[in-house]
Length: 264
Image (cartoon, rainbow, N blue to C red; front, side):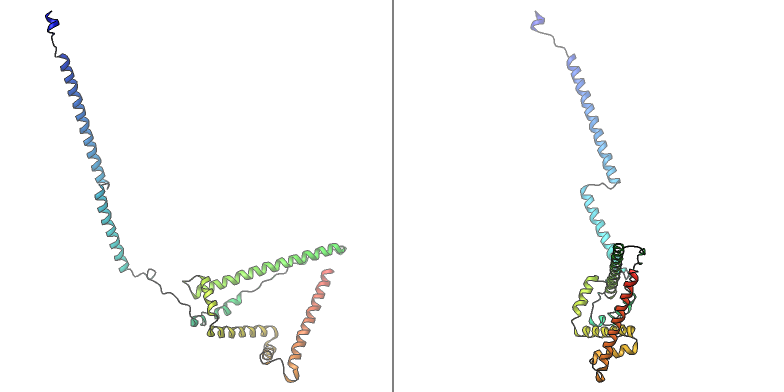
């Protein structure tokens, strides 16, 4: 009766629960201590390896940028390298174009560019070949000659354009060659350049005519062309016409002989 009315209380369960609580609190404290130690180690490593806080990184970056800019300004001020200095831009003028390094170089340097045409070897045709075979061989020979002339023309044009681009780069090194050639073309309408070009054309024409007909005969032809094709009694014009007709007759005979040899 007394036990039911006044039950006895025991402290054993409470003691056990308090002991478990104390042990769990000790474990959490040790974990927090370990976390703090790990954070401290990470912070020390960050400081050692340059991974500081954001404010420290920004300040260091500003300081390093200022030092680099200061060093560059100092090196530029004390540099004596001519390549780093600003070069003067070469302006293409009439005097430069008509000078020794101007259009005169085209006349002197471009003489090495020649039209190198090599005719193909003639196709051998059997003596007993019929007319159809001879016609086919002649057509093949004509086609090969045409292709050889195309190759020679393409090579000549390529060398000529390369020479013009080299000339443009030499006369204006700091400009594009196409722009320089366009500038030269626009300057061709000026009187100084136009007269200079006409003189060059006359000299080239004279040299070419003298190369074909000799110096004396070439000078005579040029004088007749300049002062009119009328000499004493019209002899100059007649001589010129007879010479041209004679050459045409000789060329016609040579072509006829060549065709006869090909047919044979």
